Image 1: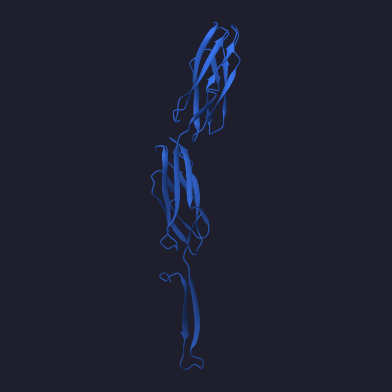
Image 2 (image 1 turned 60 degrees about the horizontal axis):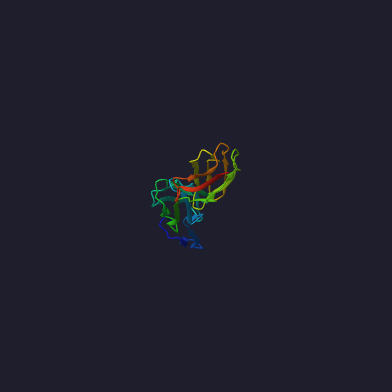
Length: 238
């Protein structure tokens, strides 16, 4: 029956004997030919990853929703992803396929690929999964953009604070430095997916003479679209 098309087939077996009182006798044979059918758990995958990193792996399932054994192979058309395992068999069980991304060397932009699942004997081969990938950069945001502390001679100015957060994509991994000996920021580094991080600014001004002083706080992430960003600090000692 290997060469028969999918569908219903019938035949008659005839048993005869010219000397028999009830010849001929027949037996009806009904045969239904089914084939495996590829069923995928999804038709699309998507990932967004920060430039310079590998995107997190994903999975999908392959299952035979027909009959017999589905003997499938998996291929793709992109060098930045790989499916494992790349082949398998299924009667009715779900097989889990891992999609591993190698995206660290990709430039910023949008990418697409197609994963193809095939079995020459399946009723619906091939089946495909579209893959969308975005390689993105974080963006530094801060508030306020200026600080204006003041104090009398012999005292430390009251502490202040500012916020840092990511208005771009991926993870903002920032560091904070300054160019003034009379101020200190804490913490001096952090990560933001979009949440606001509070940075405390402590002033050591008791030894300063009366006058006006200017310092700059630098916020940097080498992978951010707008690095560095600044906060200008203008101190007045009375």
